[in-house]
Image (cartoon, rainbow, N blue to C red; front, side):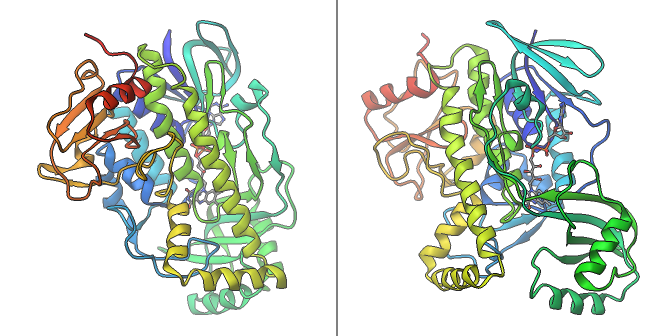
Length: 475
Ligand SMILES: Cc1cc2nc3c(=O)[nH]c(=O)nc-3n(C[C@H](O)[C@H](O)[C@H](O)COP(=O)(O)OP(=O)(O)OC[C@H]3O[C@@H](n4cnc5c(N)ncnc54)[C@H](O)[C@@H]3O)c2cc1C
């Protein structure tokens, strides 16, 4: 019996499997595609995802291959400077193609002991009291204690479970591809500037070596978006939109994407969980989907591991949906708002001007950036100090940095009093006695995902907070 089967080896599934391995859980990733895709969807990581990678000691290769941008413009493309005093040690966006992100996550997962089986498509599942039986396209059957559906927006797992996916269907479709062009770069830039005055779903970005990333509206909405456009269809749309196809040729890859917005009705059905695009889809404005999926995995990993290991308190696994579904609902809403603000109709344009003026107030600008970067998230842990439920930024300690102490994925008590104890939980929670000028409180109990579960200095209070997240004490 495998502990956890993860269906889908995209960023969400790979991150989840790595998190499970930190706790010794046997994780098997089943990926339908025999080879990694060449299609580059996401182009970057936001602050919270960068923090997540840092918390697990995974950030270095991403920084080495990515490019830091301290730019605004992530809310509906409204260009404003980043607000000052952002509550993060990583106040930048990391430009990095999704194909690189996927590769680095797969390498990390493999090093952590995750088995990734490519060319394995999940086509069936059934569950009982003890586990889940998964059926693959070649007829193989596998059995696991839990199954995580991280199999993307058209999730087979979600459909097999019969979980509803309500929302709005795609109204627009956009073609995306990388190809060479014969047109001179200066002429292309002039045409792009002109066309974008009335069509924001159009762009040509040079990638070097004569290759460009082109985006253009499709003629309609395809019945099967998994079928890529032909080069001829792409050129036809370029001519229809810009009056020229720039002499496009030699495509590296071509794809299409829509603007459907949907949220799974439930993230859990018995022993099966959904995460990433399998649980939520929305237009790519603000560059949030991959980030959201990584953070779903970061929330789910330690909880599922606790369940498999047998120490999960009642309700811990269900807190995954309780915490993450509202976050996704909020992202869906901000993408809906951004799409409205990007319409060229007079009403939305007036609203855009107003939002742009409001963003000149630094608090408004910061509020929106905290949304897009996900550093403003506060889970509902009940009444308490402002930090309760928020993730703690990477604060400096006398002995170094907080995040350096969180690579193992365990809970952590950061104790500035030196008088507290986690006896009974020391197999699950590290006790760090140190001081930080950046921590607003005598001591903080952090969950493995860095969210603040308790703040205070009273041992009795701590003793009632520990079981809620880390289960019963052991002697
Ligand atoms: C044009 C575009 C631009 C984007 N830009 C950004 C951006 O800048 N920032 C950002 O954060 N997000 C962006 N996104 C969104 C981002 O690409 C997705 O949110 C992200 O890939 C979701 O990751 P995932 O692992 O949940 O799903 P996926 O990446 O879709 O991975 C799912 C995996 O499951 C596999 N699979 C599917 N079915 C099965 C099955 N039955 N059995 C086994 N395996 C299966 C698939 O082959 C795939 O590898 C963009 C999306 C698009 C379309």
